[in-house]
Amino acid sequence: NLDVLPQNVRKEVFRIRDIAKSFGYSSYIVGGAIRDIILKKEIIDIDILILGNAIKVAEQYQSIYHSNVKFFKHFLSARIPIDDKQVKEIDLISARRESYENPGSLPSVIFGSLEEDLARRDFTINTLAYHLEDGEIIDIFGGIEDLEQGVIRVLKRGSFIEDPTRLLRAIRYKNRYHFFYDALTYSCLLEAIKENCLALVSNERVKKELFKTLQEDDIIPIILEYKKLGILY
Image (cartoon, rainbow, N blue to C red):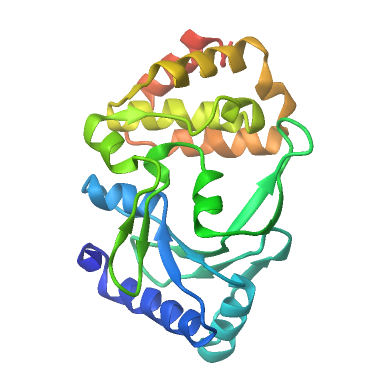
């Protein structure tokens, strides 16, 4: 139920939904917003997944509402600023598949299906999708059960090597929500740290994740776990 969102944010979400529908595209709120709605946490930003070309939807939105939209055409996505104290922006993302030329590099993306897009995400708790037309929650990877049980679980064994910034996010989510890692995730996390995979990522991307850590309500447990695992020396 989207009633937890501020009224003016819901208005923008439905505007985007209706523009997408005019192109024949389905649209979904995905990832962290659905996770936090279920956990009854504050929603800070919203990702809307478009089964089609999100750039076209964003361009039409900009034309109608004269918004200062940012476009990221290489990633088939756009960012719409929102005039709200709680939700600052809405990201529009085309459903996509991705591939990594090298571990730690930014992915190359092409248009994909809903399932392919959800399958590329970091943890099961971030794979939930809320269909904006019928209100159905799509849960392909058991994200709701993992939220209920408090589990941080990767979708595949090579997840941390593919994108080592997921190491920092895993630790952040685990401590923010007081969750625990499933056995495979913890094993993969330790393996990626042992292989020093974070060294493959640009300093800018690591700094971005660390800045997000500094914005957490309680950063001490996160920093202590970074230190314990040898991520911070």
